[in-house]
Figure (spheres, one colour):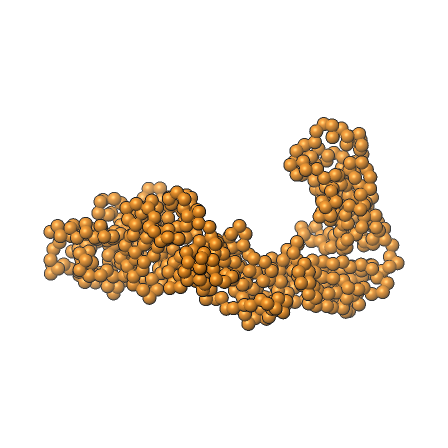
Length: 607
């Protein structure tokens, strides 16, 4: 690395180097730049993988460094002939010895090709010597880097800095230093091609500026572009400077901000001034401390099935129908904004939409529960965002096929905030059945939800019912919660379908022969002050002896049963007890409580 102190020392060393011979006596190395002809050393340090032919490089102090040969297949710093990360007299000496035939290899021959013509010859040596003594500007770009306070711009002492570069899949370190000694460091001879990206990493930041993780969210990443000289500062933020500038990402398919704890889910942000100079770079954090001024923020999207909103898309038009006041702009080039008195002049929000051409689907089947044949005349509707604007977007009356697929579904959600709800509006005369089913998907990516409704003729015998019993005193708790019933279609995990929902305990329903499970509405159970018995807890293990656990799915709010000739294989019971804060603490019952249950149930085995 070169800085003002280093340049002075190198000039003195070069003037004293009497061993440098005249240019006329030097031979010329005219080998073309062909990687197959480069002789990488076959030295393999003990203990390293045998699959790599490591390159041995000795610096001016005699210290040995071993490089993966991939590191030497591209330029790292023009003039750094021996690849020790410093351009100085030792590089000129090694290049001279190479041209004279006294050594047969260079640390990095691409660094020695100062004029970039693919040949190492006397012209490169001349350019290097003139560069070292300051008689000519170095080949490549010049970079000045510093570490300053974000809000004041004052240099920060006591930070330990690394400068790195990346080239394709490879990365390498250019230098390291402490800001106690050099508030600004200068590097020359840096490759400027677009495949080279540079970045700074700072550790051991001073007290009050963060922690041992350094400046993870403030690592300057930059390229030279069309410039030959760059000045880049890493700006550190004091712990006391709060981030008053907030940038959000809003997922309009889900209808919510996509941040949690100040971290964005779907992309990283890059904040620069409006001349493109780095401020914050490639960070998932969305709150920034910024001094007053003009800025630009851009986003690098992660690999999720979302993209920036197209203001002219059908999806944007759909959202505008629902929210007439919303405005969308083309944000593919980022957002310009101004900070004044610590606050931005506009809302900073990147609007997101599903990928173009994608859709989710809902397939509805309507069948006669007795015959299994399609049932005509069922009216089914689809309502979007039922917890918000609840817009009916489609309706279908079942035909002879009994099957219909709703498409172009571009909203997403979860079980608490569903994207859609399927409603059975009406059924043919003489039939009963149907239920409302919520539909959710994390992303719009061609996902299909299939719902099968089985409708029962009024005269069919309804022989299946379940009751809710208090485990505390054997009383009926049929008002505690409704339940739903699912049919097990096969032994494959997850192969089951909902048969009915909102069934009231004690109410009889018709079920075709087969295997089923039923589940109480857990939310209603909790809201009414009750809890089920989970056999996976310490208390559940204590009470497990009272139950035939084969009939429960690990919990007394989930029962399994078989229907044969329309009848269940036994009396069906859910069991609840009064809710107790210690249930969640997972502590065991005391002897007195266990004795109470023993006296109440004795040797009874509950099913």
